[in-house]
Image (cartoon, rainbow, N blue to C red; front, side, top):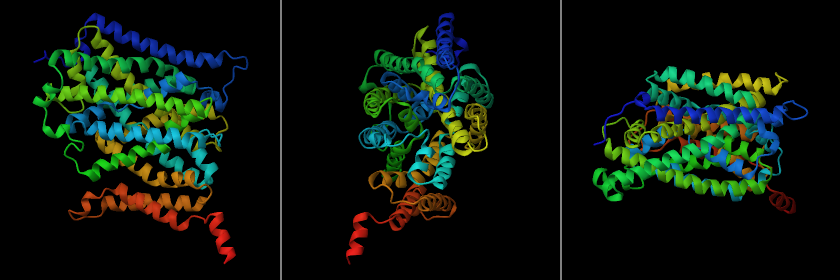
Length: 474
């Protein structure tokens, strides 16, 4: 059995040096991102500079920021693996790889037709202004970084003994300050440091686990058999919900932001393909490490087991690097989601009221942080519930009309888009609250929302030119 170690207050001097060094370098990178724009000749922020780096995101930066942004819910991933085994790799990995590839080969080129700033801005160009408002509201609720604020609060609680609520408040305040400072540039340049630290930290856990305990034979001997099944004991309907939620990548605001910021569609496609390979390797490491955590510390809290397991496993110096890596995983997603949610609020919803988009965005970041803290309290700290509820509403309401428009443009009116989205949301809400028998309980509200949206759109969308010609001929 590994020696007991509960918090990083047990760090030795070398651990603190490594941990603080990573934080300092990350902060310096964020400041450097802001400094780059302030040292231009015009020395002025434009909305394009602040929100999208002037559409100058290169391939290396695209890959780094895409990978770093996607893993803030590390404790949620640990929790799912702890409880259900490789079900996590299927639902949080395989389904998403398929969605990434669809985006790279199907969506990326189509985005080049539009010069959009945000997802609601794109929807406005595709369907109309009312659709943009509905999309902005749904985007704001979905992209508000509730899971990542909660993860940060948990991290500070486990690391420094701070209460989860105080951890959320002080940690989020820190991230809001540096995210508001330099716009997307600060976010991307801080992601560079966080990318290397987070990838290195999860790889170290796997290497030391195999050396200390052995390989697959050890895991099979110390884990339930269900941990090695694709569903982890869940129903196939529950498993497939995650597949549909993964398709939300096709409408994910953070994906779109990076694509709008890239120099060219070619960078988007290549960047997503390279990122997918890195995501696969990262998922292998986090899932494997969490399986070892369950095998060695079966009585631990599911969301915390991986963290404490790694602290007990790694030697002096590397503990500090690992803890910095976990913090980097959370911060790299939290800062991006804070920024995108504030973009949605300031650019998409309040643009007509506030002429200075940069100032409005900076103020909005702090509002989004406070909103996320409140929402985290509402969900009582359940990662899985937060992801399922917010992800289900967002995907069920927006996925079908946007994908249908990619397949057959200009057939969905502004009013039809709004009708389908609102009806889908209403149907899901009703399904959540009405009493259901044992058979109906297995049908998730997400399926109801998707079905309602699809039926309304198929019935109400405009005929094609070929269909109109056929009617005229007759």
